[in-house]
Image 1 (cartoon, rainbow, N blue to C red):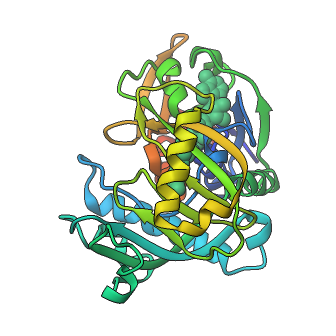
Image 2 (cartoon, rainbow, N blue to C red):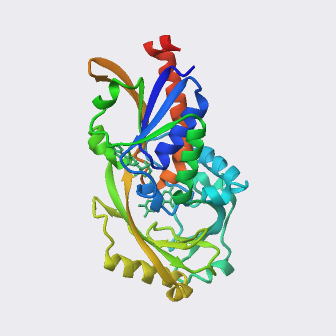
Image 3 (cartoon, rainbow, N blue to C red):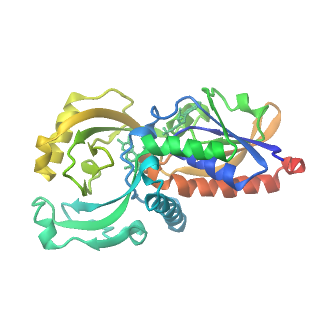
Length: 338
Ligand code: FAD
Protein backbone atom coordinates (compact mmCIF):
# COMPACT_ATOMS: atom_id res chain seq x y z
CA UNK A 1 0.00 0.00 0.00
CA UNK A 2 1.25 3.51 -0.82
CA UNK A 3 1.49 5.33 2.49
CA UNK A 4 4.21 7.97 2.09
CA UNK A 5 3.41 11.02 0.01
CA UNK A 6 6.35 12.48 -1.89
CA UNK A 7 6.18 15.63 -4.01
CA UNK A 8 8.78 16.53 -6.63
CA UNK A 9 8.80 20.19 -7.73
CA UNK A 10 10.10 20.69 -11.29
CA UNK A 11 9.39 19.12 -14.67
CA UNK A 12 12.76 19.63 -16.33
CA UNK A 13 15.18 16.80 -16.95
CA UNK A 14 16.26 16.80 -13.29
CA UNK A 15 12.69 16.77 -11.91
CA UNK A 16 11.40 14.04 -14.20
CA UNK A 17 14.50 11.85 -13.79
CA UNK A 18 14.18 12.20 -10.01
CA UNK A 19 10.46 11.52 -9.99
CA UNK A 20 10.88 8.38 -12.12
CA UNK A 21 13.73 7.04 -9.98
CA UNK A 22 11.79 7.58 -6.73
CA UNK A 23 8.51 6.18 -8.06
CA UNK A 24 10.24 3.07 -9.44
CA UNK A 25 12.40 2.51 -6.33
CA UNK A 26 9.72 2.90 -3.62
CA UNK A 27 6.39 1.17 -4.19
CA UNK A 28 5.41 2.49 -0.72
CA UNK A 29 5.53 6.08 -1.97
CA UNK A 30 2.83 7.96 -3.77
CA UNK A 31 4.79 10.42 -5.93
CA UNK A 32 3.33 13.64 -7.35
CA UNK A 33 5.28 15.94 -9.66
CA UNK A 34 4.29 19.61 -9.58
CA UNK A 35 5.64 22.25 -11.91
CA UNK A 36 4.83 25.63 -13.30
CA UNK A 37 6.17 24.71 -16.74
CA UNK A 38 6.29 21.43 -18.61
CA UNK A 39 7.84 20.30 -21.89
CA UNK A 40 8.28 22.01 -24.33
CA UNK A 41 8.64 25.10 -22.09
CA UNK A 42 11.45 24.16 -19.68
CA UNK A 43 15.13 25.04 -19.94
CA UNK A 44 15.86 21.37 -20.47
CA UNK A 45 13.80 21.34 -23.68
CA UNK A 46 16.21 23.56 -25.58
CA UNK A 47 19.46 22.07 -24.31
CA UNK A 48 21.61 20.48 -26.96
CA UNK A 49 21.72 17.51 -24.59
CA UNK A 50 25.25 16.39 -25.30
CA UNK A 51 26.85 14.32 -22.55
CA UNK A 52 30.09 15.47 -21.14
CA UNK A 53 30.87 17.62 -18.15
CA UNK A 54 33.09 20.10 -16.39
CA UNK A 55 34.43 19.46 -12.92
CA UNK A 56 32.67 21.14 -9.95
CA UNK A 57 35.19 22.51 -7.45
CA UNK A 58 33.88 21.19 -4.10
CA UNK A 59 32.21 17.89 -4.88
CA UNK A 60 34.38 14.80 -4.43
CA UNK A 61 35.46 13.58 -7.85
CA UNK A 62 34.35 10.08 -6.99
CA UNK A 63 30.78 11.40 -6.65
CA UNK A 64 30.97 13.37 -9.91
CA UNK A 65 32.31 10.30 -11.70
CA UNK A 66 29.39 8.24 -10.38
CA UNK A 67 26.87 10.89 -11.53
CA UNK A 68 28.37 10.87 -15.00
CA UNK A 69 28.69 7.10 -15.29
CA UNK A 70 25.17 6.39 -13.98
CA UNK A 71 23.68 8.89 -16.43
CA UNK A 72 25.78 7.69 -19.34
CA UNK A 73 24.99 4.01 -18.77
CA UNK A 74 21.28 4.72 -18.35
CA UNK A 75 21.10 6.74 -21.58
CA UNK A 76 23.37 4.36 -23.49
CA UNK A 77 20.95 1.52 -22.76
CA UNK A 78 18.13 3.66 -24.22
CA UNK A 79 20.21 4.75 -27.24
CA UNK A 80 20.89 1.08 -28.02
CA UNK A 81 17.27 -0.01 -27.66
CA UNK A 82 14.08 0.23 -29.69
CA UNK A 83 13.12 3.25 -27.51
CA UNK A 84 15.86 5.44 -28.98
CA UNK A 85 13.75 7.38 -31.56
CA UNK A 86 10.79 7.95 -29.23
CA UNK A 87 13.00 8.92 -26.28
CA UNK A 88 15.23 11.14 -28.45
CA UNK A 89 18.44 9.51 -27.24
CA UNK A 90 21.20 8.70 -29.74
CA UNK A 91 24.93 8.05 -29.94
CA UNK A 92 26.96 10.99 -31.22
CA UNK A 93 30.58 10.92 -32.38
CA UNK A 94 32.85 13.87 -32.95
CA UNK A 95 35.60 16.15 -31.80
CA UNK A 96 36.33 18.62 -29.03
CA UNK A 97 39.08 20.97 -30.22
CA UNK A 98 41.34 23.43 -28.41
CA UNK A 99 43.53 26.36 -29.42
CA UNK A 100 46.11 25.25 -26.85
CA UNK A 101 46.54 22.06 -24.88
CA UNK A 102 44.22 22.21 -21.84
CA UNK A 103 45.61 21.37 -18.38
CA UNK A 104 42.96 18.72 -18.03
CA UNK A 105 43.57 17.08 -21.40
CA UNK A 106 42.14 13.74 -20.19
CA UNK A 107 38.97 14.70 -18.28
CA UNK A 108 37.42 12.51 -15.60
CA UNK A 109 34.60 11.45 -17.89
CA UNK A 110 36.93 10.25 -20.65
CA UNK A 111 36.82 6.65 -19.45
CA UNK A 112 32.99 6.54 -19.50
CA UNK A 113 32.38 7.80 -23.04
CA UNK A 114 33.17 5.44 -25.88
CA UNK A 115 36.56 5.29 -27.60
CA UNK A 116 38.11 8.45 -26.12
CA UNK A 117 41.42 9.28 -27.86
CA UNK A 118 43.46 12.27 -28.92
CA UNK A 119 42.93 13.53 -32.45
CA UNK A 120 45.58 12.83 -35.04
CA UNK A 121 47.41 15.63 -36.90
CA UNK A 122 45.52 14.63 -40.00
CA UNK A 123 42.17 15.12 -38.27
CA UNK A 124 43.31 18.44 -36.80
CA UNK A 125 44.24 19.78 -40.27
CA UNK A 126 40.56 20.61 -40.78
CA UNK A 127 40.79 23.08 -37.90
CA UNK A 128 43.80 25.32 -38.62
CA UNK A 129 43.18 27.59 -35.57
CA UNK A 130 43.25 24.62 -33.20
CA UNK A 131 46.27 22.72 -31.97
CA UNK A 132 44.80 19.91 -29.91
CA UNK A 133 41.68 17.75 -29.89
CA UNK A 134 39.83 14.83 -28.39
CA UNK A 135 37.76 12.37 -30.41
CA UNK A 136 35.07 10.24 -28.80
CA UNK A 137 31.53 8.92 -29.01
CA UNK A 138 29.06 10.21 -26.47
CA UNK A 139 25.29 10.56 -26.27
CA UNK A 140 22.87 13.24 -27.39
CA UNK A 141 19.67 13.31 -25.37
CA UNK A 142 16.98 15.55 -26.87
CA UNK A 143 14.68 16.61 -24.06
CA UNK A 144 11.83 17.61 -26.39
CA UNK A 145 11.33 13.86 -26.84
CA UNK A 146 12.97 12.58 -23.67
CA UNK A 147 10.79 14.53 -21.21
CA UNK A 148 7.45 13.25 -22.61
CA UNK A 149 8.99 9.76 -22.65
CA UNK A 150 10.00 10.08 -18.98
CA UNK A 151 6.56 11.43 -18.14
CA UNK A 152 4.98 8.28 -19.60
CA UNK A 153 7.39 6.12 -17.62
CA UNK A 154 6.57 8.08 -14.47
CA UNK A 155 2.83 7.59 -14.92
CA UNK A 156 3.40 3.89 -15.54
CA UNK A 157 5.14 3.72 -12.16
CA UNK A 158 2.02 5.21 -10.55
CA UNK A 159 3.16 8.85 -10.50
CA UNK A 160 0.82 11.82 -10.85
CA UNK A 161 1.50 15.13 -12.52
CA UNK A 162 0.02 18.56 -11.78
CA UNK A 163 0.65 21.95 -13.33
CA UNK A 164 1.03 24.55 -10.58
CA UNK A 165 3.42 27.25 -9.45
CA UNK A 166 4.61 26.71 -5.87
CA UNK A 167 5.24 30.03 -4.13
CA UNK A 168 6.56 28.60 -0.90
CA UNK A 169 7.37 25.17 0.52
CA UNK A 170 4.81 25.93 3.27
CA UNK A 171 2.09 25.31 0.67
CA UNK A 172 3.20 21.68 0.41
CA UNK A 173 3.82 20.74 4.01
CA UNK A 174 0.24 19.76 4.84
CA UNK A 175 -0.17 17.45 1.90
CA UNK A 176 3.21 15.71 1.60
CA UNK A 177 5.64 13.82 3.85
CA UNK A 178 8.77 14.45 1.77
CA UNK A 179 9.42 17.41 -0.53
CA UNK A 180 11.95 17.07 -3.35
CA UNK A 181 13.08 20.37 -4.83
CA UNK A 182 14.17 20.12 -8.49
CA UNK A 183 13.18 23.65 -9.47
CA UNK A 184 16.48 24.64 -11.11
CA UNK A 185 16.83 28.41 -11.29
CA UNK A 186 13.42 28.64 -9.55
CA UNK A 187 15.23 27.70 -6.32
CA UNK A 188 16.31 31.32 -6.05
CA UNK A 189 12.73 32.24 -5.13
CA UNK A 190 11.40 28.93 -3.83
CA UNK A 191 14.09 28.22 -1.22
CA UNK A 192 15.81 31.64 -1.21
CA UNK A 193 19.09 30.33 -2.60
CA UNK A 194 21.26 33.34 -3.44
CA UNK A 195 24.01 31.12 -4.89
CA UNK A 196 22.04 30.04 -7.96
CA UNK A 197 22.29 32.37 -10.97
CA UNK A 198 21.45 32.32 -14.68
CA UNK A 199 23.94 31.85 -17.48
CA UNK A 200 22.11 32.74 -20.66
CA UNK A 201 22.55 30.48 -23.66
CA UNK A 202 21.32 31.11 -27.18
CA UNK A 203 21.29 28.37 -29.81
CA UNK A 204 19.94 27.90 -33.33
CA UNK A 205 18.56 24.84 -35.04
CA UNK A 206 19.67 24.53 -38.65
CA UNK A 207 18.94 22.13 -41.49
CA UNK A 208 22.21 20.46 -42.46
CA UNK A 209 21.57 16.73 -42.79
CA UNK A 210 25.02 16.20 -44.31
CA UNK A 211 26.64 16.86 -40.91
CA UNK A 212 27.10 13.69 -38.89
CA UNK A 213 29.80 14.56 -36.35
CA UNK A 214 29.75 17.01 -33.48
CA UNK A 215 32.40 19.71 -33.24
CA UNK A 216 32.87 21.58 -29.97
CA UNK A 217 35.39 24.29 -29.30
CA UNK A 218 36.89 23.67 -25.86
CA UNK A 219 36.05 27.28 -24.92
CA UNK A 220 32.48 26.00 -24.47
CA UNK A 221 30.97 28.83 -26.50
CA UNK A 222 31.02 27.42 -30.01
CA UNK A 223 29.53 24.08 -30.93
CA UNK A 224 27.83 22.13 -33.71
CA UNK A 225 25.74 19.15 -32.58
CA UNK A 226 23.92 17.08 -35.21
CA UNK A 227 20.71 15.63 -33.79
CA UNK A 228 17.84 13.41 -34.86
CA UNK A 229 16.01 16.00 -36.96
CA UNK A 230 18.28 19.05 -37.16
CA UNK A 231 21.66 20.41 -36.12
CA UNK A 232 22.00 22.56 -32.99
CA UNK A 233 24.59 25.31 -33.33
CA UNK A 234 25.64 27.64 -30.57
CA UNK A 235 26.16 29.36 -28.45
CA UNK A 236 26.59 31.96 -25.77
CA UNK A 237 27.44 31.94 -22.06
CA UNK A 238 26.23 35.22 -20.57
CA UNK A 239 26.45 35.24 -16.78
CA UNK A 240 23.72 36.99 -14.82
CA UNK A 241 21.76 37.76 -18.02
CA UNK A 242 18.03 37.02 -17.54
CA UNK A 243 16.90 37.91 -21.09
CA UNK A 244 14.84 35.13 -22.67
CA UNK A 245 14.39 36.76 -26.06
CA UNK A 246 16.74 36.02 -28.97
CA UNK A 247 19.47 38.53 -29.73
CA UNK A 248 20.27 39.30 -33.37
CA UNK A 249 23.94 39.99 -32.66
CA UNK A 250 24.21 36.65 -30.87
CA UNK A 251 22.65 34.89 -33.87
CA UNK A 252 25.13 36.52 -36.26
CA UNK A 253 28.03 35.67 -33.95
CA UNK A 254 26.95 32.02 -33.62
CA UNK A 255 26.62 31.58 -37.38
CA UNK A 256 29.98 33.27 -38.03
CA UNK A 257 31.86 31.23 -35.41
CA UNK A 258 30.27 27.93 -36.39
CA UNK A 259 30.82 28.52 -40.11
CA UNK A 260 34.47 29.12 -39.39
CA UNK A 261 34.66 25.63 -37.87
CA UNK A 262 32.42 24.03 -40.49
CA UNK A 263 32.26 26.17 -43.67
CA UNK A 264 29.38 24.14 -45.18
CA UNK A 265 27.14 25.61 -42.46
CA UNK A 266 26.95 28.87 -44.39
CA UNK A 267 24.62 26.95 -46.74
CA UNK A 268 22.34 25.67 -43.99
CA UNK A 269 18.82 27.01 -43.47
CA UNK A 270 18.12 28.39 -39.99
CA UNK A 271 15.00 26.66 -38.65
CA UNK A 272 14.63 28.24 -35.22
CA UNK A 273 16.28 30.23 -32.48
CA UNK A 274 16.10 29.46 -28.75
CA UNK A 275 17.29 30.98 -25.50
CA UNK A 276 17.60 29.25 -22.14
CA UNK A 277 18.97 30.14 -18.72
CA UNK A 278 21.37 27.58 -17.26
CA UNK A 279 20.70 27.12 -13.51
CA UNK A 280 24.31 27.71 -12.43
CA UNK A 281 25.82 27.37 -9.00
CA UNK A 282 29.38 26.81 -7.79
CA UNK A 283 28.31 23.21 -7.10
CA UNK A 284 24.97 21.52 -7.73
CA UNK A 285 23.00 21.09 -4.51
CA UNK A 286 22.14 17.44 -3.90
CA UNK A 287 21.42 17.02 -0.19
CA UNK A 288 18.59 16.93 2.33
CA UNK A 289 17.62 18.99 5.32
CA UNK A 290 14.79 19.18 7.82
CA UNK A 291 12.78 22.36 7.38
CA UNK A 292 10.31 23.74 9.90
CA UNK A 293 7.09 24.21 7.95
CA UNK A 294 3.71 24.99 9.55
CA UNK A 295 4.94 23.76 12.92
CA UNK A 296 6.30 20.46 11.61
CA UNK A 297 9.81 19.36 10.60
CA UNK A 298 9.58 18.21 6.99
CA UNK A 299 12.40 16.52 5.07
CA UNK A 300 13.30 18.57 2.00
CA UNK A 301 15.63 16.99 -0.54
CA UNK A 302 17.34 19.37 -2.96
CA UNK A 303 18.51 18.45 -6.43
CA UNK A 304 19.26 21.53 -8.51
CA UNK A 305 21.98 23.84 -9.81
CA UNK A 306 23.42 21.62 -12.54
CA UNK A 307 24.43 24.61 -14.69
CA UNK A 308 25.36 23.64 -18.24
CA UNK A 309 25.37 19.92 -17.39
CA UNK A 310 21.85 19.06 -16.29
CA UNK A 311 21.12 16.60 -19.08
CA UNK A 312 24.49 14.96 -18.49
CA UNK A 313 24.07 14.53 -14.75
CA UNK A 314 20.29 14.25 -14.23
CA UNK A 315 20.03 10.47 -13.91
CA UNK A 316 23.12 10.23 -11.70
CA UNK A 317 21.92 12.89 -9.26
CA UNK A 318 18.40 11.40 -9.37
CA UNK A 319 19.86 8.10 -8.14
CA UNK A 320 21.52 10.02 -5.30
CA UNK A 321 18.12 11.39 -4.31
CA UNK A 322 16.83 7.82 -4.11
CA UNK A 323 19.49 7.24 -1.44
CA UNK A 324 18.40 10.43 0.32
CA UNK A 325 14.72 9.39 0.28
CA UNK A 326 15.77 6.03 1.76
CA UNK A 327 17.64 7.88 4.50
CA UNK A 328 14.58 10.06 5.22
CA UNK A 329 12.34 7.00 5.40
CA UNK A 330 14.71 5.35 7.85
CA UNK A 331 15.37 8.37 10.03
CA UNK A 332 12.06 10.17 10.13
CA UNK A 333 9.07 9.52 12.37
CA UNK A 334 7.11 9.09 9.17
CA UNK A 335 8.51 5.56 9.06
CA UNK A 336 5.75 4.71 11.50
CA UNK A 337 3.43 5.06 8.54
CA UNK A 338 5.15 2.29 6.56
P1 FAD B 1 14.66 23.23 -15.79
O1 FAD B 1 14.68 22.49 -17.07
O2 FAD B 1 14.80 24.71 -15.85
O3 FAD B 1 13.34 22.85 -15.02
C1 FAD B 1 12.95 23.52 -13.85
C2 FAD B 1 11.52 23.13 -13.53
O4 FAD B 1 11.17 23.67 -12.27
C3 FAD B 1 10.51 23.65 -14.53
O5 FAD B 1 9.49 22.69 -14.72
C4 FAD B 1 9.94 24.87 -13.80
O6 FAD B 1 8.63 25.23 -14.22
C5 FAD B 1 9.92 24.33 -12.39
N1 FAD B 1 9.83 25.35 -11.38
C6 FAD B 1 10.74 26.30 -11.04
N2 FAD B 1 10.28 27.04 -10.02
C7 FAD B 1 9.03 26.56 -9.71
C8 FAD B 1 8.05 26.90 -8.77
N3 FAD B 1 8.24 27.91 -7.91
N4 FAD B 1 6.88 26.21 -8.75
C9 FAD B 1 6.67 25.18 -9.61
N5 FAD B 1 7.59 24.82 -10.53
C10 FAD B 1 8.74 25.49 -10.58
N6 FAD B 1 23.18 20.37 -20.42
C11 FAD B 1 23.84 19.27 -20.82
O7 FAD B 1 24.03 18.34 -20.01
N7 FAD B 1 24.28 19.13 -22.12
C12 FAD B 1 24.11 20.11 -23.04
O8 FAD B 1 24.50 19.95 -24.20
C13 FAD B 1 23.44 21.30 -22.64
N8 FAD B 1 23.26 22.31 -23.52
C14 FAD B 1 22.65 23.46 -23.12
C15 FAD B 1 22.50 24.50 -24.02
C16 FAD B 1 21.89 25.69 -23.63
C17 FAD B 1 21.78 26.82 -24.61
C18 FAD B 1 21.38 25.81 -22.31
C19 FAD B 1 20.66 27.06 -21.88
C20 FAD B 1 21.52 24.78 -21.41
C21 FAD B 1 22.18 23.61 -21.78
N9 FAD B 1 22.39 22.56 -20.88
C22 FAD B 1 23.01 21.41 -21.29
C23 FAD B 1 22.03 22.71 -19.46
C24 FAD B 1 20.66 22.11 -19.16
O9 FAD B 1 19.70 22.65 -20.01
C25 FAD B 1 20.28 22.39 -17.70
O10 FAD B 1 21.33 22.02 -16.83
C26 FAD B 1 19.03 21.58 -17.34
O11 FAD B 1 18.00 21.86 -18.24
C27 FAD B 1 18.58 21.86 -15.92
O12 FAD B 1 17.45 21.07 -15.70
P2 FAD B 1 16.47 21.33 -14.49
O13 FAD B 1 15.47 20.24 -14.54
O14 FAD B 1 17.29 21.54 -13.26
O15 FAD B 1 15.82 22.76 -14.79
